[in-house]
Length: 407
Image (cartoon, rainbow, N blue to C red):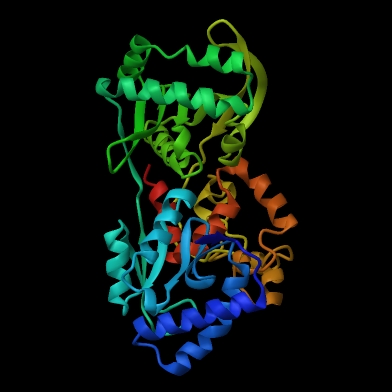
């Protein structure tokens, strides 16, 4: 039996901690008993606070558990009595299929775990010399790419139109009437799609089984014409991956502003990505006029930056005061004194003995959310920045953002 986010009682936390200790003793042979006991308090805090906790039971006793936060497996342990019986794979598969898991950290000295994650599609992308507690136990950061992006071809048209119709009829039905979605779904046409593939930058997201799970297209002038994700692949990062590639293309092509007509359903996603509503409008689909929004995003200029990352998580290379031509800020590394006067974030973190906001038990607090919302117009989502810092560390955070400066 599988339970998801049960009541985190003291009895349950103790039972899972005991399971963790037994599993670690059987697999983490590089740890001493003293090392294990020092980690126990961190494990209990993690079990109590992890966003998603999933437990496998047999005869009402926990035999395996997994903790997930921000698309990352933070913990996955199986009782030694149940090694090799598929429970770890079952939990990991659930995390991948239902929670969009893409990341995991593994001790380099635990070859069994490395082999397990590689077998289910994870690959190493960062090597860390120390663990999160600063101990000299090297960590391998691994990630799993559930799908790839490629340009569409005429052979994809049938799959694209099928995805389009099913998505509109099911996902967009949340915000539009049955008559409206049926009218909208009837707009998909083979000749029109074939022409768009020839004249637009038209891309598809494809699984390792070669199933198309999303598509998007943008004109050479910067009009984002389409963005649709398969009804069974919602909230799995498909739209973000598609939009990342669309924006990469736009920057490489010298496009400075992207415009789009966005549905009621998609508006929250685009607002989160820094797009602003200019006009609410009625646009004719086939026979009916449907409500949508003319949205715009000015693509932020990005300069290379490899210095200190402030408590708030801003990437200075994308800050307008750092990238402007006249009297530019030298960045948080050289302008350290300015950051250290910040009462909102820097001094707040200092008082708590932490370096970044994601380490705070209140994260994201009200003032952080308000601050982050104001920065969306500059193309940075500070909550995502903080989650990236938490998942991948500062080195990878800077690498990811600096890669954008080469667009």
